[in-house]
Length: 419
Ligand code: HEM
Image (cartoon, rainbow, N blue to C red; front, side, top):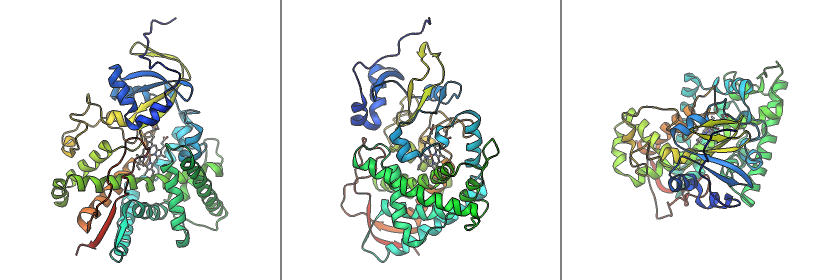
């Protein structure tokens, strides 16, 4: 018997539909109405705990309290994650696999990545000068797919680029989808895995030879804790775990373009080349705009936190969007204001667009530095290297589709390279 109090509970048989209808704001709305950072509900027929805020994030990222094995729903594994990837590991197995990811994130590797990104933006923009209009979101995905493959040492035939860009996009675009979009995501994953598995086989046979500092090389030759080469299906999932999210940075880059359009006064600050301001602007884009709404884990074993009982096996959701818009952490959280980061006391649990906590000891996004660097290059390109116009279009984005993308996908026209 414990003396634990009751977690505020949302009454009713199941609230999966509310989660779908309220999207990014579901957990935040309920936290407000319960006046509590934690509440209990029922999702997909099961009891679930939802929580948000800094303290909740600290708890969620304690590996003694939560585990990831069997936490993600099958539909997410079939589209976004893939089977048996780093996301589903715990303890030593997770640390060993995460070291493999972090080993390709050295400062030199990030410089190589920014150089490739700059080159790909230049090639794409030269092409846009010759056309009437371009859809920025679609173009950015292709720029990033080409960038990701070159950086990861993955050879790709020019004739395959459009089809594969679309496959890699569909894997994250279907992250919160049901119905045909979900099936498109599954199909995309099957195609991408088939392509990648053949490449890894060729690396292991010596017929494809990527540079040693690349993901394709390192992951193909990675050994598990037992000394065996990583299972080829898993190596496939993990190389895709590098390329897919780099393509997904297209979403943040589109929000950069949107922010520059909606807040034209920012353009001047960004054009004077103040690196600190550029960084603050990028942090604010990652905080303000919606991307992934929450992350999930299972309670590892019974424990009590702040007087509340957590029972082993309970599905727990940590609110990423809501924590980044938590008024206890952020002044006027619904105002876009890069200057809020001027004297910001960095905390790995308060600002969590890509998860929180520690990289090696926890599940925080392995590609956060990659994301920031690619965003910096892209921002500089959009603001300083080209001029363009936005014709009339629907630039709104909804707070329900996960991930949310501006409805028009941002059409640009009259693109000119600056001299
Ligand atoms: C596009 C912007 C991105 C967003 C919004 C994003 C977001 C996230 C989130 C929310 C997580 C889960 C954190 C958790 O489970 O607690 C995550 C994990 C991960 N991300 Fe990202 N990410 C992005 C870009 C990237 C990039 C560019 C890479 C690789 C180059 C990457 C690789 C990973 C990996 C491997 C994991 C699993 C980490 C683990 O389970 O230990 N992500 N990301």
